[in-house]
Length: 284
Ligand code: ATP
Ligand code: MG
Image 1: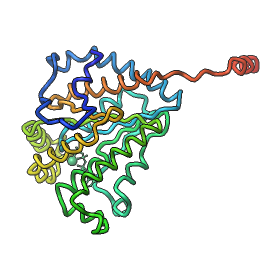
Image 2 (image 1 turned 90 degrees about the vertical axis):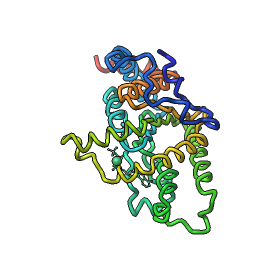
Image 3 (image 1 turned 90 degrees about the horizontal axis):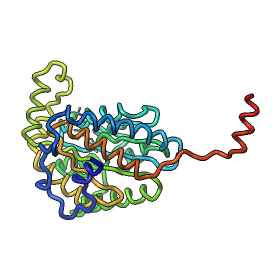
Image 4 (image 1 turned 180 degrees about the vertical axis):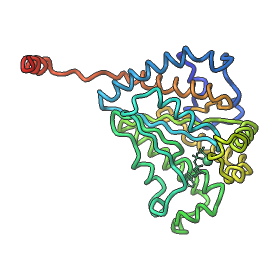
């Protein structure tokens, strides 16, 4: 069980390909019920570790979530965050950039949302969108108003290098980064988009864009693969999480978070004994 997460970790991306992972995979778990005990165990451990992370105030944890539309980012984040102390985490969801955001370099809006020491920051979409959407849709790149001289055929490789360097930089400053790609099959996406149409309580989630973007499914997967290949490192690994079964994706993400925190050897700060004694006396 301890190494559940290892199976899906990509720390050296060069040879990564989608066919390495089956989106329907659930290892030996038959259904959500079969994971309950493990989920509970993980949740208890995670809460305790988060308390130490906060008390120690040295490290921060950044969890990045990427997926195609309907990949299950929202529900996975909801489930994992519900096991945590809300005071110690914040979730940032990145949508189509605003005019103000477009007037800055592409990393600007994300770097402002980094977690402080002791905190867990969750990115629902991230700077990886900037090597996906504008790459698939050149008209989106136009909106970024880069000086034409800087837009060459190496733009995407350069951005990926910049992302990789930024992640190295953050790592060296105590931000622990874990990146999740929730991997669903094209068939499962169709099923989920249809459910958004069929079930009244899900109608609000439906956007005609989702159907338009579905036509670009293969392009997105190609760009994502390139991003994973060029940015998967030991210190900021990607996890390619089989996500056709939401309960399985949630189990893997929770396992990765717990394992990551447990590897930090988090300790409660030790207070000066004499100061404690003085305070005790004063209170008495
Ligand atoms: P849901 O899964 O509930 O639909 P969502 O994350 O897709 O949630 P939406 O408001 O539907 O939220 O979509 C956000 C949109 O913003 C996506 O289509 C995404 O591609 C787009 N987006 C995010 N970041 C960028 C970016 N840097 N450049 C261009 N588009 C972006
Ligand atoms: Mg959407």
